[in-house]
Image (tube, rainbow, N blue to C red; front, side, top):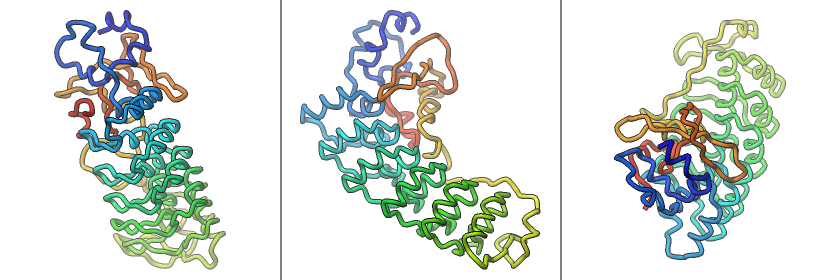
Length: 331
């Protein structure tokens, strides 16, 4: 493989389908690699000209899901290729098609803090209050991931800051307080959220911040609301009035709720693309290629090493959907 890579330039590598890099079988001749990039792959790696050509041909379903249940717009939104997102939106793609997990392109962009992408999506009618299968809106996703400017952007565009997810009864403020995102808590408080709302166990945002040791957030909430109920957990699901002196109690480490039984999470970010594609069919480790930070493009170099944060050439996969691991290129 390294011998072949030495002969090929980066531009030649990018002109080939990533689906050829599963590592199954032996490559007999270079002609086997001369397969054009498909639309899903091109949208993910930032190949603007290829996406433009696919659109101009007019014979492709731009809303088609691949084997992992993702559309080209989902990949471009998640990775952050705003020019390709704009190109697809101008071509009239459906902006609210969800993944199998119920996540829309806006949720995917929000989870990674891609503000410019979110701007384009909202301009074309993306729904702010759509929920995934866990009851999370786009605001929940960016709040949990800690993307401060994305939170502010969504709030400024009318996102419901008091919505509740059904599993734990959390609001975005509770999620931010429990996670220790001080600036996001301040944004939400300044926006006028209800700070005294309780979750399914009776805890408030202040309770959760105190429980996990985020005393600065406790102070922010105290400054915002007066009087503030001083509550702390005395047992599972039991809360009672206490003085602020109880804030000195040792705080446990927060363990995030397990929302899926296998596969990476949406909150892993685009880096999960490298991790999930590093294992081929049957769990066999595949050769990796260093990811070069691009301006809208990704190139691949083969120096013979395989690093944890590298990306390799193969079919584009969804970092959220484990079915993509076993899928070949989109058809």
